[in-house]
Image (cartoon, rainbow, N blue to C red):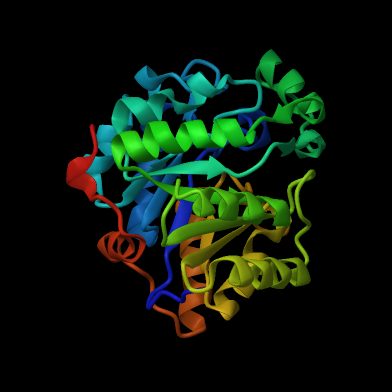
Length: 311
């Protein structure tokens, strides 16, 4: 693993798993996404990982017209790196998932490195009253849907966004096999270092959140990539801050945000993404790490720069 001189904090602002009934603080409208994204950047996030929501009821959408209602406004108010999802939501077609990336040509998009089960039905256990009918099925049937990321889909995204737009990737690796898939793509010359590997821990269907799983993933990544990669880590739900702390101790980077957890502490809903960013920043700084600015993150990850995006 290559250790950056400063810690890159990514904030995943809204995602596609959590629903409006789970927290009143989850941003769903363009105005809410702008407000929370800008505040997260001001709190220390160098990268903003963004999904879109239907403004009427908060359901996930890949519609570029909805992304267009907040991307430029965030760029105007902050210099943060904007990262557009290509994961979208389970059930979206590949074309729906990459439409916004192709329209807006961001500096970074996410890229999930394998097909997998992605069951978040348990996220609805605490909900006693649902605001929208779509939420119930979306959550309850998540275990019946597949997160579809075959080698051909991964290659398509690399060619259309990487080759076509100069986009670099947040390689989301939910298990050890995903690291080997990234190595396969690298061996074929489809992607080039430095690789920004986002280890995802605690999703039902992926690797568990125990620290030994993180150190194992790092060991395998070291064998495959040497110093050609930077590690970032996210923990789902209650594991968010603890697994981030382990990543920091290992010399890695961190991702937080209401996409990954709705809580700030045990039983305490986060009132904003910025609260989570501020907390992980405090942890990093207490461990004597400095936080990377957006421009420092651009230099570390060799990004094309904000001037080269299409929004």
